[in-house]
Amino acid sequence: MRRQTVLIGTYTAHCALSSMLRFREITGRKLRVNIISESGFWGMTRQGGHTAFLDCVDLMRTHPHLEVRTDDHQPCDVFHCHSWGPYFVWRARHRVGRRVVTAHALPESIEGSLPLLNDGVRRVVRSYLRMAYNHAEVLLAVAPGAQTSMTRLGVRPTVQMLPNAIRTDRFFPSSSLRRDGRAILGVPSDTRVVLGVGQLQPRKGIHDFVATARLRPDVQFIWVGGRPFGAACAKLGELESEAALPANCRFVGSFELEQMPQLYNAADAFLFPSHQELCPYAPMEAAASGLPVVFRDLPDYEALYDAPYLRASTPEGFAALLDTVLAPGCARTTAIALSQRLAAAQAPDAWVTRLGAIYDHIAVAALAAA
Image 1 (spheres, rainbow, N blue to C red):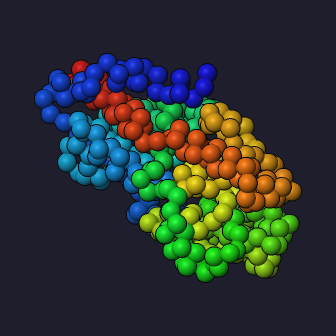
Image 2: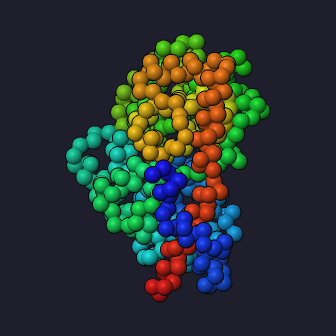
Image 3: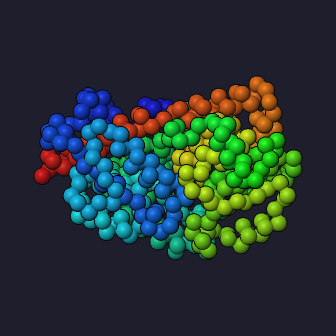
């Protein structure tokens, strides 16, 4: 079954039955949703989980039958959290029957970000995540791989898949954004640029990004992203050793979300060599911005994306594909069209409808149980 046919299951069918949510039909008022995330508390505002939280708030506020609040302490009908830390566990404890959690973190992704990993640390990570995610009634997996991982973890909640939505109102091709982005990065207008975006850690394929840059010294390679966990980032010493980067490769650090449309538009192609992902924002934001995107060949993408995409597994393979999409002509035009198709599959309208139906299902069930 392809992705569209498995998303949300009975929730999609339920939503299609009526233009108005059942909760509003029953109660005569909008369904109140409180959406929270701990990412802002810990200063982790430049990563995908925080972007997902902000987008969720903005997009769900467009739903005509919802009243959306953020980190509100007033009574609500549904409590939706985008993080898994102690603040969530504390806030969720009194909201039995009405809790939704988006699982942005998996044991595999956390373990891939931590130093000094051993069996004891793995057991602690998995035990904590199991406990945290068991506070939900519905656990939202953003990709098929996340759904499989949650099943292996042994969580109790219903696990449904809802891939991230891409804000095409924010990310789109623009010549003016391109000029602004190149000014920010200090890149001349005639320089070819390959962009990479993500946390600065080995799991993101940093070493292969640098190795690909060494193979193409006539192209500027720029990596945007920092170390959100500071000294706790995995193999920090190895990353520091990349200080001797080739002249055509730069690590420029993190930028605020508002600047990312400019930075994507500043590039000519996007390389995403990450070794492990769920439903990554960066390549889809790049795709929506009109860039050809080159992925690492991962089985998870086969299950996630319906449209074809460009993929390779080695720096040599990445370099060869980049040669093709950076050159003017039919191959570049085709690559951009593939990107547009990928981005369109994660457009926000259907996402808002699906998530609204999930909220409605939970709220109506809570009314029936009261």
